[in-house]
Length: 207
Image 1 (cartoon, rainbow, N blue to C red):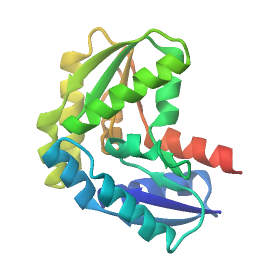
Image 2 (tube, rainbow, N blue to C red; image 1 turned 90 degrees about the horizontal axis):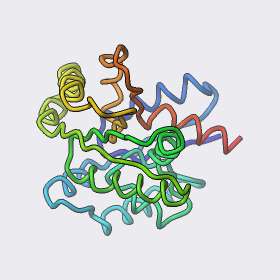
Image 3 (spheres, one colour; image 1 turned 120 degrees about the vertical axis):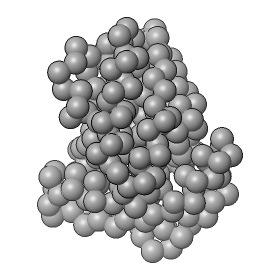
């Protein structure tokens, strides 16, 4: 089996490689990174559809099979192509099936809009009523850009603790936020993220 990833940050390569190895050490992987896609979304408040599609063409010229897009900001564009797997959809389905008061933690504004839309879509399909509570962690992003993941994750956890009083679950909307979970293990609410759960679901359905 070969798994082809599309990332918008080089920081995701080791994270997702480690996840795959923990599940199926025999799987072949290939990682493609296009940081310009995320920079565009952050600077313009919307996704670069043309750039995203061009990147998919480049990947498909070298690979066959489905592509896993690990960037939640580009999740809506994944919906337009059945051969592109959206990393955040499996965990959102889990959240909607099990909780009604959902905290959405995000460190980039463009991700908030996309994640809220996905939650609404999944809830509608499941005929579930949910309440979404925004947890603004925008101030934490600078640490990620500086490459200080420890401070990035700790600052996210601190912000969540301040704003999550009424939440049953916290959805870390970006793959980069997953490490914050280790600083929130003692809280009353569950904290979930897309990387591990998304890859596990993908592999379970492709065997």
